[in-house]
Length: 285
Image (tube, rainbow, N blue to C red; front, side, top):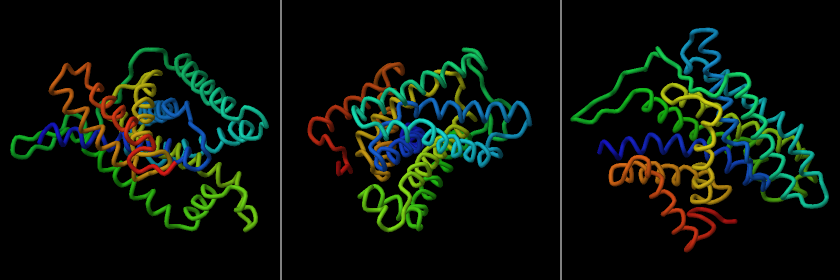
């Protein structure tokens, strides 16, 4: 039970990190290779605000989420919209734009903060745990899991709004939505903003118990790619289910094998799904 609950909490974080990637791909068929770096930006934003104000990162969560929302919209307007406008080799251009952006963001973080690990200390939940019947769960991870679950609930609510219906319509037919007065570029930019905001939430919660460094996003991005492919490209439900599955498999693998090999089980399941159901568990693409 201890292993299962620990895997569940990390799985919720993996799922939220993957949700933004799945949302953007499902909306415009663009794989964002700077996804992990945007989460790293959120973690450094939480770390910097904690240093400057002394406030708990959870208090600054709305601020960081709003900052990432604006950053996501700016990235679309400055880079992605131009990449989508090219007439030849669109796929390669999109890959190189987001990959180059990832290198730039990582290098900028190294220049500003250095390469050493940083951490947020002295938070309200730090060094506290919830225990019942021999099960011990650190409160920072427990809070992160609850907040990630609430974020998924928020995404579900957004999907029921007029904006959510506009997102769905744009995903179904990019050209036809213009005939009913929907600005495709505006919807795309808001989609990028929403995807980045989910990383803002995940990054702030991770900063409460995980180290911060310029390379921290790379590992989470890799897990996010596997989660999206496992759950199905463009499916938020798939991202949630696959994230929970990966969290559980990783936790169990760490118990059966060396902790350094904890991702072996995750990749084994992914390869099995890739062989027998290439579109993922819930994918329709």
